[in-house]
Amino acid sequence: KQEVTQIPAALSVPEGENLVLNCSFTDSAIYNLQWFRQDPGKGLTSLLLIQSSQREQTSGRLNASLDKSSGRSTLYIAASQPGDSATYLCAVSLTGANSKLTFGKGITLSVRP
Amino acid sequence: EAQVTQNPRYLITVTGKKLTVTCSQNMNHEYMSWYRQDPGLGLRQIYYSMNVEVTDKGDVPEGYKVSRKEKRNFPLILESPSPNQTSLYFCASSLWLAGVWTQYFGPGTRLLVL
Image (cartoon, rainbow over all chains, first blue to last red; front, side, top):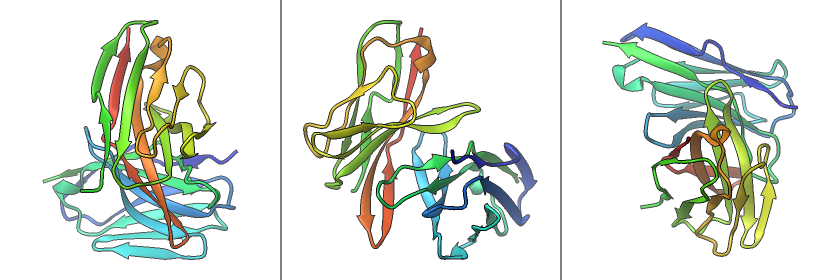
């Protein structure tokens, strides 16, 4: 059974710091991996999606990498801002036959001004 | 605006009183699903639907029912709610495009069962 782990559960950093959020998964046979952002009272917003054949994806200050063989992904946030404070969720898709996602428990990030 | 809407957003109820959480999407997506999110457990899929009149169980379907009579709506039904169904519920609709499922999540429904 696929398990997705995100450690630590919470992280607090000062504004301007570059930071890395980690995600690990137990079964390397994934179809793709996504990083989501969750804000209180709002739904989940997809940040980056990496197909199993890709190594990384970038969007603005965000860069996500994927190492399927080791079962790891990282989300790199450059020059963090208070507006980046949110919960970041990693999720894997095991097949293209459906859109089911297996989620990690998330990392709650707080960026201090 | 493309969106997934859920109603109600917040609900307090008592054990055994039937309730329905509605979910509607305006993107003509065929695939819809329900997740629940609990502290320490993350998001888990409850039910999903590949199209009208086609539904199937996810990982935690016990105590829930769904129906898909129209493409845009996918209500979640709790016939006899219990306190262990207190949770944050998310509806999602998905589009298959260029080899990727693009997911759109609703804002969530926070349910408290007393």
